[in-house]
Every structure is written in structure tokens, then in C-alpha cells.
Amino acid sequence: MVYKIGELAKEVGVSKRTIDYYTNLGLLEPRRSESGHRFYDEASLETLKFIEQCKSMHLPLQEIKEILDKKKTLVEDQGIVSLTEEVTIHMSQLKTELSQLNYLLENLSEEQKLNIIRQLTSQTSELIQTLLSFIL
Image 1 (cartoon, rainbow, N blue to C red):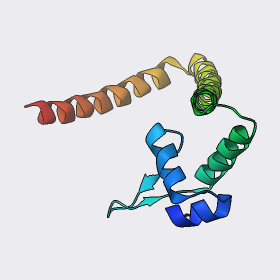
Image 2: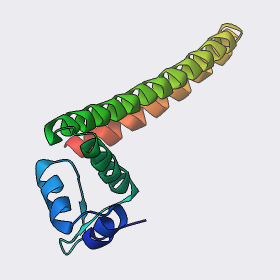
Image 3: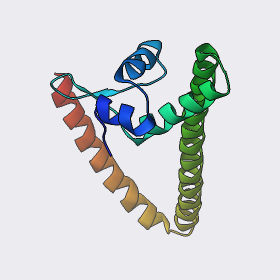
């Protein structure tokens, strides 16, 4: 769901001015419409609720900001870890395919190997010509 500043303020029970203040401090990060209006998503709603809970425990806004920054860094780090895992899986699949291709190549006759080399040479030539046409 998307909230305008007034809707978000009402949902959490704070003033629009409070949301402006938190935004200026970097505690909240609204998105902007093409016309420049701010709007807030569910993540902003949860962040605002978290800020208010922290304030009720008398945490200073600077500490709350540090916690939110660490959380953001952790989320970004998890994204990097996830991407690294995906790349690792893909590399493993490629290694398996390469092993299978090597096995097939080892079992080809000399004539079959020469035919493959001719086809690859032809394709490589076409690729080089295409690349040269872009350069020249």
C-alpha cells in the first residue's frame, strides 16, 4: 500500500511535521512521484512504527538512526550474499556442463573434431567481421 504523508501520520498517530522531521534526519526515505509529491510504502510504515517504539523506550534519535543504518547495511549485505550464492550455483552448473562437453569431445573421432573446428572457425570469422563493422 502507498501512503501520503497525512495518511502515514494518521496510521501511526504522529503529526505530519514529525514525519517531515524524521525525513530530514534521514530516518525515513520517501519516494517521489513525477510531480514531486512524497509517498511512503509499507516499509516506511514499519520503520515509522519502529522509530516510535524506540522513542517510547527513550532512545535518542541518533541511536535510532544508527540502528536503522545498520539494518539497511545488513539488508544490502544479505542481497550481496544472495547474489554470490546464485553466481556460485550458476558456476557449478557451468562446470558440470563443461565436464560433460569434455567427455563428449574425448569420445569424438578425429574427423568429427575437425568438422567442429571448421564450424567454429566459420562462426568466429563471422563474429570478427561483425565486430570490425562496429569499430570501423
